[in-house]
Each structure stands twice: as structure tokens, then as C-alpha cells.
Length: 327
Image 1 (cartoon, rainbow, N blue to C red):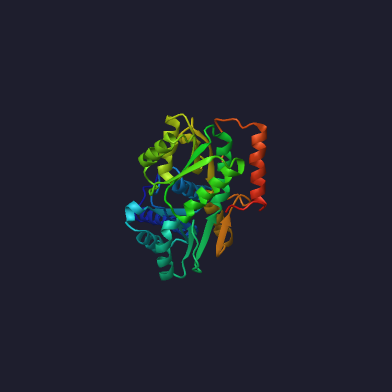
Image 2: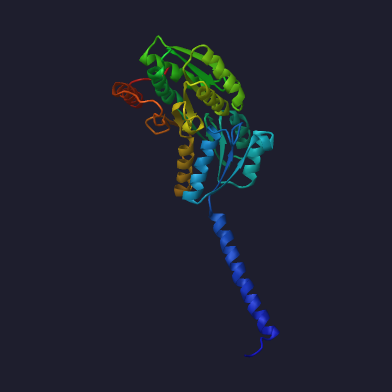
């Protein structure tokens, strides 16, 4: 066999380098074509077992099914929403999501500085032209949660735990109370507000207070604080209703259903629109029962009699077609 000369070896090596460089450049070009999405998570961030985790799941699905890439920021790492949002802009993301009403002020500051960047605000409404706002009819889903609570209680006392006494959480409580009273106006609904979305121990203490007042069904719209409520309900042998995502698996002996706020679906569908059309719907979008934005997780632990199931279904139809408005 002829020995390979240095010249032949160098020629072969350079050809290999050119092939590898071409592949790398091709891969880089392919990556540059991919849609990039950034998200600034709400205050508690990942691990809240509720709102942020649900949004993150929507991004994961978009990555796996739509081929996008995404990055995220948490408040505990950035120190401010504004700093995290600016970092995401500088990464040249095609779309930047601000998750939660608490992000709005800083999101609008950044949106004014970068008028060519498009943003998506979840859970609040902005009038800026480069911000699309998505809100949910939490009051509709909470109304149905109230119906379930009223059909379940034996003491005629149920409890509501809110993460903060703000207009958004009042939508949950107002819907819940109206749903309870649609079944039985004599049922007492005891409300408390934690002032914290990230404290499961506080949630447990508030649950204990309500249980001490004979509440036997607890509904929490309080993020990770609400997880403490669910677990305390389970420890005391009473029922609970989860929120935002299906929270049955956090307290399997207590959670009869959850009021699902499908932020994961909203984020996925928005990204799907971006991938398909190169842009997203502008302005304000509100998602309720009719649009699949909210709803109830499957009923578990208890068995609703047929007449109770019909009551729940009838109220769901009335809310969906607009016969009933939550005040």
C-alpha cells in the first residue's frame, strides 16, 4: 500500500475541516431560524406547583411539539422584573412573556424602551401597542368550584383562602361565593387573605383557622401558599379544591377537583400562532369556559349523585352561553 504523503494528509484533513465547518454553519443557521421565546416568571417562580409551573409546562410543550427554544428568568435571580425582562430582550427573543399581574409595571417600562419588541402579558391588561394581554374568566371557573363545594359540605360552612386581597384574587372569591350561594344561599363562606403566594406553612395555619370555624371544604387561590392549605385539609380529613392546575396529586385524600386556569394552553396556542403566522394577535384577549380558558378538573374522591351532576352541568351551560354573569 502506498504511504500517505504529508501533502495528501493535509489535503484530506482540510477537506474534513471544511465539511465539519459547513455542518456547523448549517446547524447554526438552522438554530437562528428557530423561534425564540423568553419568559419572566411570577414572584414565586418555578416549584409553586400552580401558576408558574403551569406556564412553564406550556413552554415545554411548545419546545417539544413546535420546535421553539426558550429561556426564562426568576425574580430570586434577577432582583427585579425589569432586569430580567431587559436580559430577555437583549437575547433577541421573538416573544417575551410577563407572567402575572405583578410583572406589569416593569414590563410596560421595558416595552416603552423597546417598541419593536413584542410582549405577552398574562393575567393583566396593558394598553401599550407592543403588548398583547391575555386574561382569564377566573370567576366563571370559581363559580363552578363553589357549586361543587356547596354540593359537598356537611357543615354548611366553606372557606376561601386568597394569596392577596387584590382585584384578580377577588375574581376568584366572588365567583366562588356566587357559585356556593347559587346552590344554597344559607351556606356561610369564610374568606381570608394570606398576603403571600409563596408560603405553604402560612397556608396550613390559615387552613387550621378555617377548619376551627367548621369549614369542611376549602378553596385556595394562593399559589404555593395554597398547597399548604390542601395538605392541611388532607391532614384533618376534610375536602379541598385546587387552583390553576389539577392539584389532586398534592393531596390525594382531600382534593375533590381543581379550578383549572389553562395558562399552559394559552401560552402554547400563542406560540403556535407565532410559529405559523410570524406574529401573534394584538390587543386584549379574555378566555373563559367557552374558549377553554378555565374549567374544572375531574371530580375525585367523592361521587356526585346524578341530580348533583346535572346541577353542575346546568350551571356550566348557563355560564358558557352568557345566561349567568358573575357579579
